[in-house]
Amino acid sequence: DRVRATGLDVTARIDGAPVDLPAGLDLAAYRIVQEALTNTLKHARATAAEVHLCYGPAGLVLAVTDDGRAAAPAGRPGLARGRGLIGIRERAALHGGTCQAGPRPGGGFGVRVAFPLSGDRPS
Image (cartoon, rainbow, N blue to C red):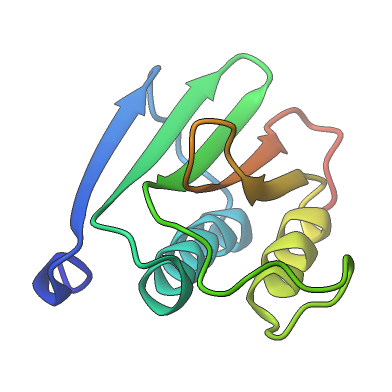
């Protein structure tokens, strides 16, 4: 609701049957979504974003996508001005997850994080 109040049209979608997550993983997922939406507001010049949570047998996949454009012309590869994506990747890894982030083929930007929900993840 706070992000919508800025004028960004945010939709949320949940697929699968939600499960109770361990407290640390639940907080990490929340913070990842929060950071991805903050990045959209700060950098994407987007009009819309979608938060998609997908619960499945292998785990939780969360994706935040937007319809924005690059905030500035592409610079040298590998240089990051902020810490947002670094923090997202670190939060994902801390809970045994993986992260993919970057421009989407049809335009906009996307962040996708997959968390395993088996007993084989770090606590």
